[in-house]
Image 1 (cartoon, rainbow, N blue to C red):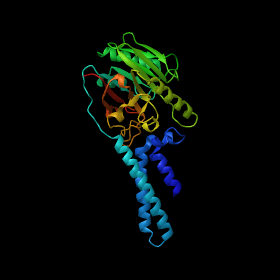
Image 2 (cartoon, helix red, strand yellow):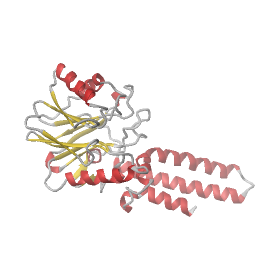
Image 3 (spheres, helix red, strand yellow):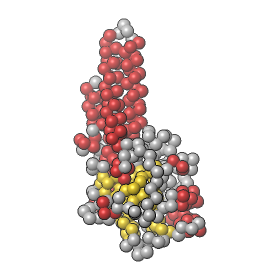
Image 4 (cartoon, rainbow, N blue to C red):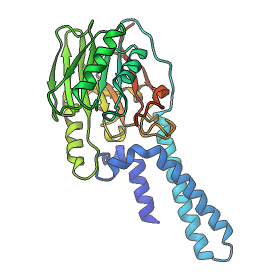
Length: 316
């Protein structure tokens, strides 16, 4: 009973206790909404058992006590989620704003045309693809967008690279790319007409992947140093529980800024209010005001496991 309560406290208060990047917790915390639903179901079931088993006092007491603990933890979790919010806001159409479209398509789960159509529908200025599969797919996306009225420039590393960034031709002049801490899954694109775009696909924080995941988060924090004009976007395989107070460095989580950090992107078969919020866009103060952040459910039937996100930054 005491152990259950202590685990519950660690889970609920992980970001404030500084254990958001601890083994096991780092992997489970993104499922906060789903865990809360499970705690409610288990807690109510135990309370029902305590009511039904009238003659077995010891069992009734244990069941009722454990059920009460689970329900208290569930209520506390719900409070945390309520503070983060489930706000669904319309996409902002501010003039001159930067529209950042991010979508982890898990390699070949979505074809180039499907990705391009979604990016065109979002009227994206920047497209971040954390796991495009290979350069042929990314090149096909760029070509298809160009053929349909939105010329873009592709930024991607050499053979084996998974992450790709596409920038509208009107903003890509003079831009260049650099590999990140993991050249296969991280990169930066900087230029005179855009903030520095940091693209990330962090490993899962499980087993051997935990060290690499922590390294990626530290690296992102370093890119978001004082005075940096930065927009970070990608699949972090983690929730804001693992960030430092809702951000990394000086970059703040766009969803948290707009009371939408309770909405999840993975998997697509779960309602966003239950799904895991592991895809993020973070924005530094000098990059502009976050005007809107949206989880796009329009691609739920595309075959992708992740939902795309669209963040609108700056403009007037």
